[in-house]
Amino acid sequence: MTGIFGGIIAQDPSGTLPETHTLVTGNSGTSGVRLRGYSVGLIGTLTPTATTIGGATQITDLYYDESVPQYLLQVNGGTNSGWTQMVVDSTTFARTSATYSSGFWTWSTTNTIANQVFGANGTSHTVTFS
Image (cartoon, rainbow, N blue to C red):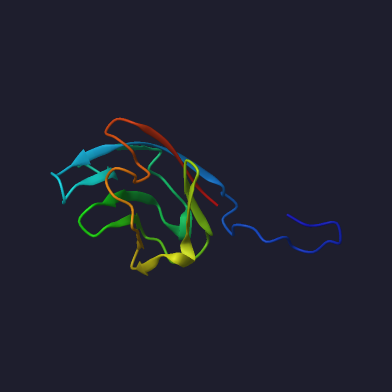
């Protein structure tokens, strides 16, 4: 993409962002140790699971962990670059605000199970990466 003066406008190097997914919340655990969101083969659903964020191929986890409390995003094959933010419905998670380690991003929070962004079991949410 080029601007009016022929300069390059900042963009996703893969050319695929923004990227939108639909997450249907799943629930696991009991009070104090619950997970809410999506974890492949465990809880919830994510459509599609394929991704290109940070050069990754698949989102394997995106959930709120009540015991920490934190939000966690895990991808297969990703690096800590190539995207700026994740928005779940209207709540923004900046990539630079997360702690990153080998395909995992975590965001510490003061949210509780009652006000975390993934809501109750079975609720649908739009997740957008840009």
